[in-house]
Image (cartoon, helix red, strand yellow):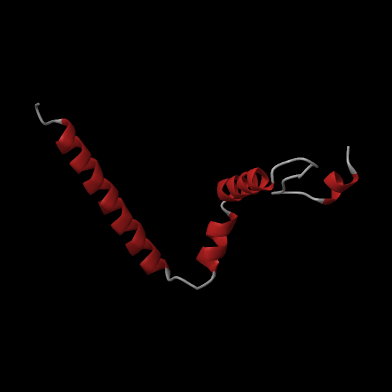
Length: 79
């Protein structure tokens, strides 16, 4: 066990000598995306009223439904 491993917890990527920095950055970015940290920060930057949250969720649900209908419509066309 390394010394640093007990100190650093959470989303971290260890860069060893000879590792590609870009590859390590991609790993870190993926871990951050999976843990939804950046999304949480963006959501907390400004207060959003519960009614506007519901409205936004309903609008996205409608958009998903329309997209699903369009996809079904395209797949049912006889060629």
